[in-house]
Image (cartoon, rainbow, N blue to C red; front, side, top):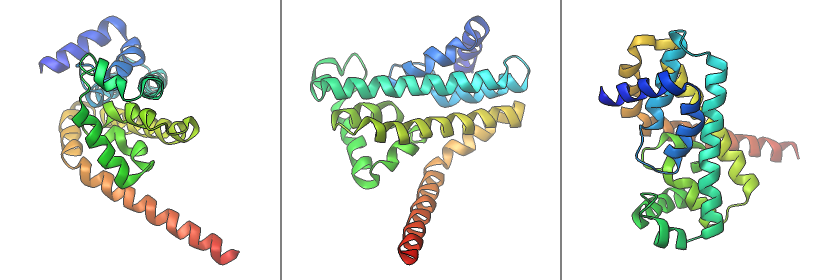
Length: 202
């Protein structure tokens, strides 16, 4: 409950600025309340009438995009020396990058779309794709779309389930890995069917 109390105090004092400035700090991998909880609680506050839902979602998406863009630019500009020189200040370790590399090697750019939902990956994927110099357009297409989906999903839990949001969020996070795998499989199947359909028409 201490974490929730801290989030509540931050919202009471700074409102939408918590989302606009706090979520980038979460993306940079600083030790602050996790983004999932912050966004879900934001949905609950909108449900309670404390915040307006549209500016809250807009601020959350903007904050998430700012955060992952900053990490991408840091990785792109500084490369591997970023880990060697400044990793300890960003709570960024070589094993984090190696774990991210394994995900990326397995799923490619699609991992950007779902990275927000994978514990321990959201904070490091931006650095990694910057270090390996993924083109900005590709990065923005997948990462920004993923940010919007992540915000809407967790915001909706708080907004539609009200006081029950901690239970629903706990259940979602428990089975999140399987949900992400299933969603990824459906997308891959859809892409394959789409390509075959185009080839058949050609």
